[in-house]
Length: 80
Image 1 (cartoon, rainbow, N blue to C red):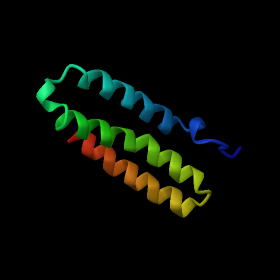
Image 2 (tube, rainbow, N blue to C red; image 1 turned 60 degrees about the vertical axis):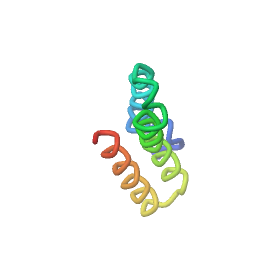
Image 3 (tube, one colour; image 1 turned 90 degrees about the horizontal axis):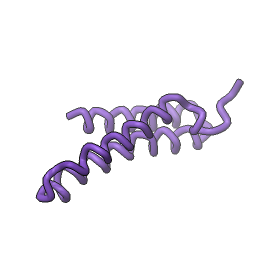
Image 4 (tube, rainbow, N blue to C red; image 1 turned 90 degrees about the vertical axis):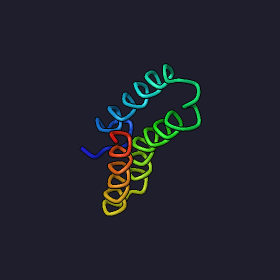
């Protein structure tokens, strides 16, 4: 069965869970980090499911793989 929507992808669902967790954790960061670490983490984190969704929407395996690579890079940024 083919995937009709990126929302069906478990990796996208888990990435969205990560986004919610990062937003929750960063709420407790010091205010002086609002435009530094907090912003950087949130931006990199939301990039993960966003790139998965965009890649799946391209309807090309080659492009999907490329967007998965970008999502993986963003995930490594969050980890760092």
